Image (cartoon, rainbow, N blue to C red; front, side, top):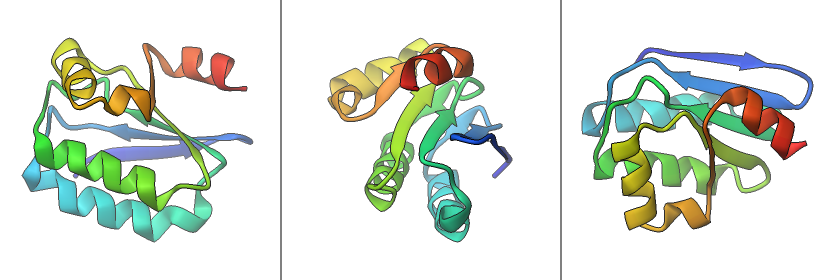
Length: 110
């Protein structure tokens, strides 16, 4: 899975650099987050602006990370319309806030 993890004082941005977030990537995504868990800042921004397709496995991976990082604030950034609709359909948008850009999330979350 291609991704980039960057941190500032209060935020860790995890940018998924794949078009498809599906079963093929879900397991490695969860494992990677578990490996870097101790290095993450209090606010996690999951930037999925490059993701054009997400299936139930991708959604499950996001939910697993949400549960794993209970002590942190997690938000999703840059979701394309089909992914936003998936979040609304499954009501995950009630658990995890969504923002259009990383900047919006950083400004609003602080």
